[in-house]
Amino acid sequence: MDVISAFLWILCVVGTSAGSMSATEDDYPVNKHDDPQDRFDYSLGPYGPDNWGRLRSDWHLCKDGLNQSPMVMEPNMMILDPDMGPLRAVYKTANATIVNVGRSVQVWWPGAGNLVIGNVTYYIKDIDFHTPSEHTLGLFNERFPLEMHMVHRTRNREKVAVIAILFNFGDEDRFLAQFFDRLPPLSAKGQMFPLGELSPRYLTVPLGQHYGRYYGSETHPPCNEDILWTIVHVEGHTISMQQLVKLKMVLESDNARPLQRGNGRKYHFL
Ligand SMILES: *[C@@H]1O[C@H](CO)[C@@H](O)[C@H](O)[C@H]1NC(C)=O
Ligand SMILES: *[C@@H]1O[C@H](CO)[C@@H](O)[C@H](O)[C@H]1NC(C)=O
Image 1 (cartoon, rainbow, N blue to C red):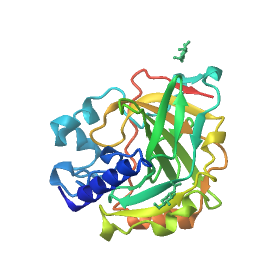
Image 2: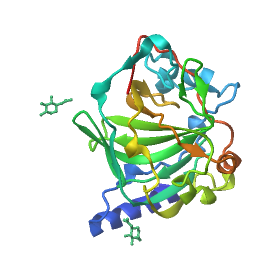
Image 3: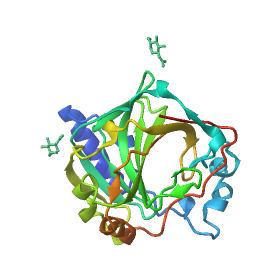
């Protein structure tokens, strides 16, 4: 057991005995980012997206999967679907932890709320960032400066739903401003830092009346499928250039996976 898992294990024991924390070991990242077995990147080289599916047999979906993300957007796959109704996501203040994993920054925010789709409740686990955006919008598949992924899971951990928020340049985002001055440097890769309480006050997701939905995959190895994606394209989600620079300065590289074929999938939007 390495230092971080030991630390998390202690956290869990304390949390359980205090009865105040429902997080378990599995709610936090396993510190294996420097394991050569897990190596991949966003370059055009041997570890880049074109080769992910060949690096390991259990990553084969990255090349063989028919429901991969980010899905390219084409006019014939768009379906206006008023039945989807408003997005049912509710968040509350909760303590968060941040870790720079080199290819992204992850904010672990268990206990901060949930997302209801159909009759299924998904609980938020973590948030991570991609620049430029992985998903695109419009006929020209335009990429945005930043995409934020809010990853949610059902209690039994069987189903995953991700809300992706696309940001344009403009005013500073006040939700991100809570911690963008404390992004861990690359030199602290793999180390977890407490962020204290993170408030959803300026998170405009619950107001989202305009979003799209489709079935896809993780956008990085192992590229597991059956992930329910919700793409939020509310006007007015902006970050400042200064905020984006802060993120880019701590990342190893840009981290957007190339667009993946639709293979007959539909994109339902409202
Ligand atoms: C965050 O952690 C502190 C210290 O453990 C605790 O006092 C506080 O209640 C926590 N906040 C929330 C919203 O759980
Ligand atoms: C939700 O559950 C209710 C009652 O169990 C059922 O009637 C309804 O069809 C379900 N809706 C969906 C979208 O699964």
